[in-house]
Every structure is written in C-alpha cells, then in structure tokens.
Image 1: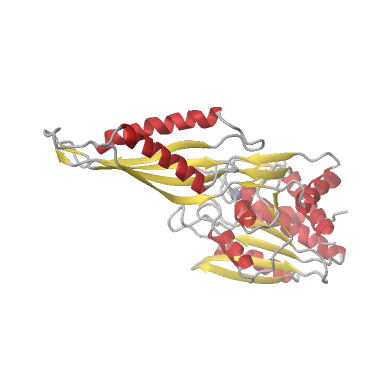
Image 2: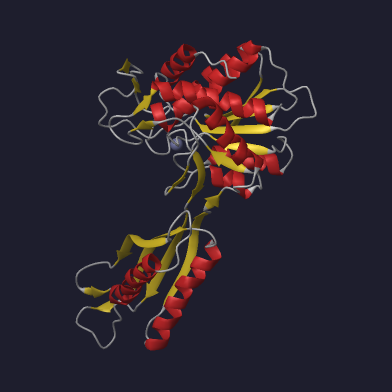
Length: 390
Ligand SMILES: [Zn+2]
C-alpha cells in the first residue's frame, strides 16, 4: 500500500503556490513558468530522478522527470500544467495558508495541488525502496491556460520519438478523486458576409453586410436549438454553438460592405472540425439559394478535439482500482464540459485518464484545495504507479 507523507505533500504545495506562475499570454508581464519549473526540477533532481528542462519558447519551459524502472515494464506518463490564470481581485493569491483543512491560493486546485501530489507520490515510492520494472515520466508543462504549447510539445516529442511512447497517461487535473473519462472539444469558426459599401442615401447601390449577417445569426440560433434537442452523446451530452464576436460597418452614413462573425462550436464525439465546418457551409449555401444576393464565406480558425477515455483501457481500470484500494469505496466516473490537455495525449493515441484532488474556486477570487484530498490523491497516484509499472 502507498506510503505518502501527507505533510510533505502540503509543504510542497505551499512552496508551489508561493511561486507565482501566472500565464504571461493571459496577463502581460506575468511571471510564467520558469521559476516554478526550477523548483520542481531541483526538487526531483535532489530525489534522484532524471530531470530535463526543455524550453518551448523563451521563459516557457516544460519539466520532464523520469523515475527509471529496471526494464521490461510498462511506461506511465503523468501530465499537469504549471501555469495559472491571473490573480486580479484575490485577497491572498500566494499565501498557501491552511485553514480548516483547506489550503488557499491561486493554483491550489488548478492545478498545483496535483503537481504536489505527483511529487509526494514519487517520494513515497523512493522511500519505500520498491523496485518498478516500468518507468514513470512526469511532465510538468507550460501554458495549459492559454494555447497548450507545453502539452503540444510533449505530444510532438512522443510523435517524433524524442520521448518514449507511454503505455498509459494520467492527466492530473482536478476530478474530486473520481475517474475523469471525457470532455468536450471546440472549434472556432469565422464567417464573413460581403455586401456593397455605398453612401447611406443610396439604397439602390448599397448592400447591407450587417443585415446579411443577421440572417446567418438567426440560423445560428436555430442550430443551437436543434443541437440541444437532438442526439445526445451518452457521456458528454450535446454539442452547442454561440456567436462570440461580431464586427462590421465603418460609420453612420454608409452601407457596411463587410461583416465578420466569430463563432464557437463546442463539440462532442463524433463531431469534428470538418463536420462542423460542413454544417456551417450548408447554412450558408441554403441562405444563398434563398437569396442570390447573399454572399458569405467561412473558415475554421482553431480546433481542439473532444476527448473520451477508452473504458476498457488498462489505465482507466487501474485508476479505478487504485481509487477503490486507497479510499475503500467504489470509484465513480465524471466528465467535464471544458477542454483539457488530455485530448492532446488522446490525439497521439495514448490511453489516457484524468484524475486529481478535490477543491473549489478554479479561476475564481478564492481558490482552495481540500488538504486531505491532496494526500489521498498522492496515495492514489502512488498506487496507480505500483500497479501499472510493477
Ligand atoms: Zn487546469
């Protein structure tokens, strides 16, 4: 059984919370991941792991730490992000103080707690003197809260053979000690309607591109209704669509020649960027058939796929069994609406699961983690490693 030092888990988390690592692409001039990466790298190096710090762009590193097995076992990857969102409005963003069983500060649950749990699990394993045949690779990554350059780099490392392809992966985002088995994806799309710019007094010449976009917006609203009432994915429910940004017109006295709309389409399997692009194209072509004066074009701007765990995969089964062994109660599954880095690991074909501690206030003004769940989570990680890499 696991041998986690709960006090060590708490102390490491306090250290991590006290090192600001706000994502500089979210808040200009923010610290980024360099300092927290040094702390993690130095600590794990001191415990005897093989540690590399790989800079993705200037000041934005990933830490890759390997607990080497003796050979012949399965390789397991743990993945968690070091960056946080901003701290505006927070009374104690970097206190790391513990009150009534909760540890406070930005990143406590999203997701420095999970990082501390992996580190305490590692120390527990080392101190227990256990011999593992398989290796454990811990990736502490940059930039999950913005563009995921960190996990994208890890996925590329695996694709191109710079990092050994793991047999299973645990994304350590918070799940309340449940087995995370899926989340939605999203596709960002742009539509441009073309009108004809003209003097406001010349309806005979002008074509109002904003009014044309209005026709499309009516259809977007109708599509949302159809999605909500339509087929539901058994785990993730229905996809959805909404308008995000609209831009058109130059001044009061002119017909707008052009209007641009940016849309977000949240997706569930089997929806893909191609299928939602086609869905939008169909709407545009129907509107053009109804009105030959309607001219619009669309393009896909950015894609993040939905993700679903394979319930028969060994990593899912091992995680469920480890939760049961450590907590003494049956494990339960959960899904998330928001997108996570797990999809990038799933996209490279690695059987992946999400599992992390309990807490509240992600991205909010008061963020905290349940300290008991931190220790329990570390024990679950240790148990997953013992079973998967034995
Ligand atoms: Zn997170």
